[in-house]
Length: 454
Image (cartoon, rainbow, N blue to C red; front, top):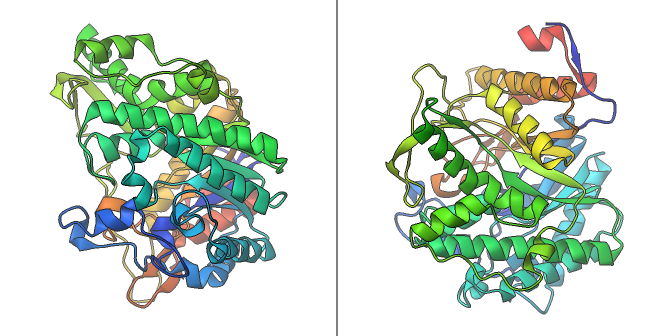
C-alpha cells in the first residue's frame, strides 16, 4: 500500500470534555452537576473515583494548550460545563465561569490550536435534575439559553460548534440501564429524555443562526456499526432493531424529521410509552445543520435473543478479534461501513469527532509510554477512513479521543484513552508514542509508507 494522502483542507484534531478533565468541581461559583452527585453514590463509579480534580485542566489549561500544540493539533474539542457558567441552570451567568473559558480558548489560540466547542457533554446542573432533568421539556429551553450565551461570548473564534454529545449514550445509559448519571432505569423515560435532548439541539441551532456567530454547527452522534451474526431473518431483524435503537432513532429524526416507523411499532408492542410529540417538535429537531458529527469505536455482532429488553437481541464477542482494554472488538472495517452508510443514507458532510482506544498504558523505565497498540488502532482506522473518502464520502476531519487520559465516567480512572499520559497523583503529563506518531501524521497530512508499516 502506497502513501495515503488526505485532502489539503482536512482537519486534524482531538477531543476532551469538561467533566472529564477540568476538576475544580466547586470552585469560583460552579454548582453541583448530576455527575458530581452520581460519583458520590457508592457503587456507581469504579474505585469510588470522582471528577473533583480529574486532569486539573481548570488550573493547567495553559500548559495543556502547549501540549495540544506539541501533538500537532489543528483543532481541539472542549466542552462547556453548564453548572460552571449558569449555576442555577438558567438565568444569571457566573462571570468567573465564563471567564475561565475565555482564558482557555485564548491559550489554545495563542498556540495555534483552534477551539471546537461542544456545548453539552452530559453535566446537567443537579438543580435542574431535581426539576425533572431531561424528562422536563423546559430543560431544552434552558440549554439553548446557555448556548446563546456562549455563542455571543465567542462570536468569531470558533470554527466548529457541537450542540450535544452522543444523545444516545446520555439518554440510554443515564435513563435505561442506569450506568451513567442520573442513574435511572426505565426505557420509556430514556426515549423521553432522548426526545428532549433532540429538541434542545434544534433550539441550539436556532440560537446559533440568530446569534450571528461564525463557524459551522452540528450534533455529535455515537454510531457503532451493527452486523448480523448470520443471514437468518431472525438475526438480521435483531441487528436492524439494535441499529434502530442506537442509530436510526436519532439519525432519522435529525435528518429526515421522523422517528423510524418499524421501531415505533416494536416499542408499542412491548408496552413502551413513546414520547409525546407536539406540533413543531420534529421540524425543530430536524433543523438544517452544517455537518454530521460521528463517533466510532467498535462494531456490534448481533443476533436474535432475549437480552436487553425491549430490544430482545443477543450480542456476541467474536473469538477472532483483538480487543481493547474496554473489551471492545477492534473493527476498522466497521468504521468504513459506518462512514459510507451515514454518507449514503443521510448525505451530510461528516466530521469524525471521536475515534480511539483504551489500552493498559504504563510508564517504561526510560520514562516514556510506548503504546504501540494505540498506534496500530489509529493506523487501521485511518486507512479505513481514507478508503471511505476515496469511495466518495465527504469527510472533512478526524478528531482522536482523546488528547489526555481522563476520568472515564463510570470506569473512573482505570481506563486510559489519551495520547498524553496523566499521572493523576502528581498531574505530570507525558506525551505517549501515539501522540508523537499523530503529530508526524498531521505534519505530513498523510499516512506515509513508514507510518503504515513502522
